[in-house]
Length: 135
Ligand SMILES: [Zn+2]
Ligand SMILES: [Zn+2]
Image 1 (cartoon, rainbow, N blue to C red):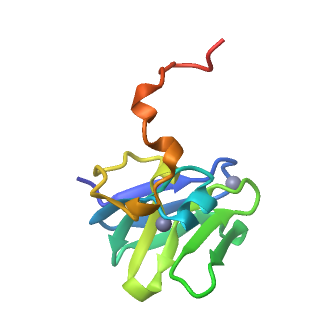
Image 2: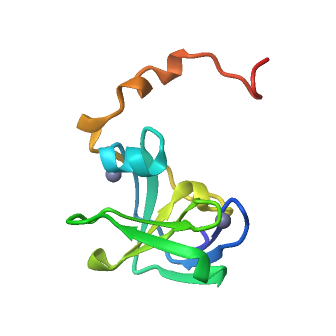
């Protein structure tokens, strides 16, 4: 398994490279992650001791630190896409799975904060699936 990972934001302005291995892949259902993702959970990979290099667009990256918590989110100021964040307090790079262009090398290792799980996503396996926007 390669320890070089690449990613970018939706508008393509920001590109990055991460050197390191992912130990954890958490699906976080906490209410902060629901707010910041606009969805039912955040899917974040953690690379302890990983080295993050911005290949372009670093000046477009904004990092929001939620007051009195460890909750941090980096995003592109142009398109709002989630981007990696340095979690200095745990010597980790946090990488939102969806911003990777290279293959996500591991499967989720845990659901966390499930007591706060959004009620609407409890039965998503029961709704119809379409490969495209349905007519
Ligand atoms: Zn962008
Ligand atoms: Zn969370």
